[in-house]
Length: 196
Image 1 (cartoon, rainbow, N blue to C red):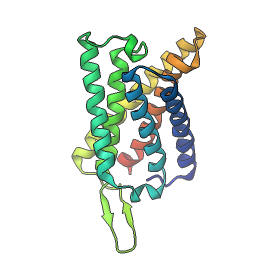
Image 2 (image 1 turned 180 degrees about the vertical axis):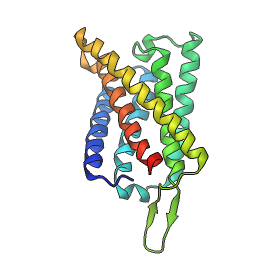
Image 3 (image 1 turned 90 degrees about the vertical axis):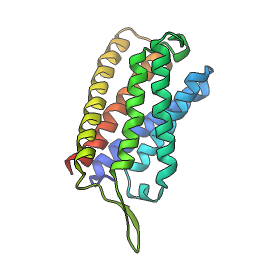
Image 4 (image 1 turned 180 degrees about the horizontal axis):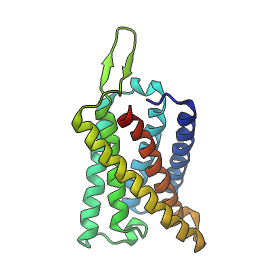
């Protein structure tokens, strides 16, 4: 998907870090809502690593779409239930409904990236061509990329506050750092698709 080797490696390392963090959270979290969220973020991080490289094209599209559509719906549902106070903040690791919205945007961005990369089946290989997006894909891509970049900056501001407050890393601070890396990393992945 990416042609710049520096960007490929930077984003591979970024999403490897978020994958390791999600796996650590998955092992340590006991609350069911957090376990589902950790699992979705782990799968998303691994998918983002593969998207950095041409061999992502051999991974079947439909299972990815189903997982990330379900992930989007999950976080939208959690956001609504939290806004209605049917789910407590404590059951979500102390995070606000805003955090759930950003998770939904990340999952939706995955759906967009998969749909926006039309597959071209050749005689020798199956590749993804992401040049020449049609109007709907370009406009929705700009909106999603802007939302991801904005979320990344908000996470960064929150991370600075957390670091100054000297909170523990495996918890709120780590979640905010991971959210920042995921948001900004995904924005960096989306932009070449739009600009190309």
